[in-house]
Amino acid sequence: MADTDGVQETHDYHLDTPMKNEPFHLKGCNALDWGMKNRLGNIFDARSGRTVMLAVDHGYFMGPTTGLERIDINIVPLLEHADTLMCTRGILRSSIPPTFNQGVVLRASGGPSILKELSNEEIAVSMEDGIRLNVAAMAVQVFIGGEFETRSVHNMTRLVDAGNRYGIPVLGVTAVGKELVRDAKYMRLATRICAELGATYVKTYYVAEGFESVAASCPVPIVIAGGKKLPEPEALTMAYRAVQEGASGVDMGRNIFQSEAPTAMIRAVRAVVHDGLRPAEAMDLFNTLKNQK
Ligand code: 5RP
Image 1 (cartoon, rainbow, N blue to C red):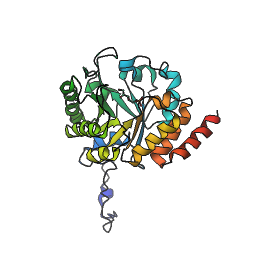
Image 2 (cartoon, rainbow, N blue to C red):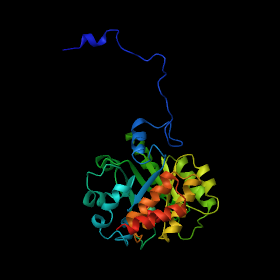
Image 3 (spheres, rainbow, N blue to C red):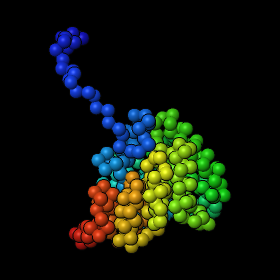
Image 4 (cartoon, rainbow, N blue to C red):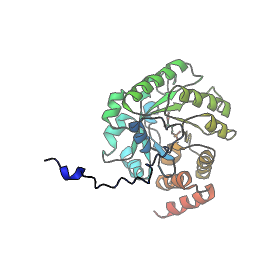
């Protein structure tokens, strides 16, 4: 029965308090729809505005990469420390517990292995399957300057169109071919192209000279890849500089899962990204956590 008493003029409408109208916590994202923002909120922490994405998608072209031979043993214990997991649908379905509640960023491009021309990728996962897997975003490689540059850009724009239809963010991943120079000029070009063509956020590499200009000229959030394994102090310094110079976090793989103490490392990276710990303090934390075993 309808509650007719409940519509009497006895409610408090708080007429002296304007409704809150707070901006979203990510740059360039205010105009996105609710579902898109909600998914981004499952990647980027609302308090810090940043993310620690754990990248374990390397197998899609590299096979069983060192540290990823057994996802169930090496990676699942790290999940509780990651804001987001970046992986393939094969690993997600086979090896990640469906109770994992943080964001999943699904690798959506693929094709060539390390034995072939890497820029020759295609879209390898449908948006429908991403929705079925309840992902927070889809990730696609973009090879600016690569042999199949236009194809890879087209992969991204098709995915962006599909993502916009359903409210799924798209992460444009700038992939730098071996023949290209990894400098700020290249990163500005690659990240800006991804953003201009609709990527919701962009992943790139940190460059020691001029990263601020890369972050500043990209109108959507940037996260940095970790790249090849570095000594822990260097990896923590890179993460620190990146976020201080405008990155909205890291999408780090090998520098975490190939570390001598992966759990200590991801926790130290978190402290840098979310709490602004300086590299030396983060190294102290790493050593303390490492020795707790
Ligand atoms: C592979 C990727 C990886 O996710 C990315 O390289 C991050 O991993 P790492 O920190 O090991 O570089 O996009 O193409």
